Image (cartoon, rainbow, N blue to C red; front, side, top):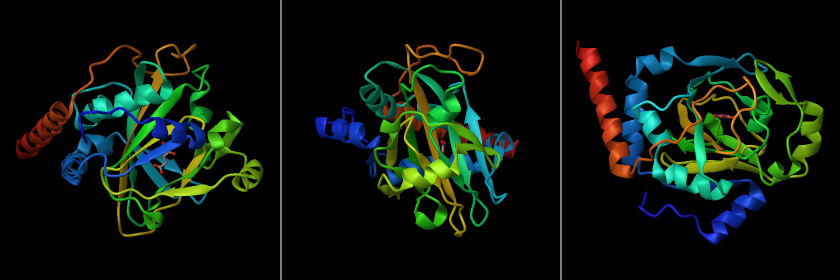
Length: 265
Ligand SMILES: O=C(O)CCC(=O)C(=O)O
């Protein structure tokens, strides 16, 4: 991660066309190793995770936070290298909406059905002026259920969503038509690779039937003019401090030390 987080004109054009931007090795493998160690040692994180079943009944787990604590995960959600590009892509200052650790465990991690994030978020927000940054903590590949996206599908606008398994998903009949219209991209990611994506981009992922875990941190934002219009969305829609790389690394280190001292207590 450098200190200049400005996206180039080409990257902005590619996001506008495709609805996503995949930036390999954005964070270092060392930074991801530190984040992964904290996350795997963090019993509160796994205890607070919720299970979501796919159509086959396989479970995907996610630990979601609306607030921005001094945790290792909160540090990445505040990170300049994440927030500044999101602001460029959304052409506005943003508020943090939530961040979540997606835990797709080896051999059992469930699939995510085709959906748009704004299909979930629509109940609380008027505009799809929202976006996410997925940070690969583990290597994500086809066999452990990397994210799949339909390039350009964000341009359809929001589609109707219903219940699919325990999840909110797009009607399979419509998906069958839509899948033929757009290129499907498997977002294989080394640890530290990031994916910025639009809230109307169709995405899914397969179950993880491999021996490799696939954990990823997803940080989600809304423009400051697009706060919830009703009680449908929880969150702290206020200005927040953005941290540079040193501050993020420090927060991850401190989180690790807190966990070690709790374990030793
Ligand atoms: O982690 C995944 O595979 C899917 C994540 C996802 O679809 C989401 O957070 O909206």
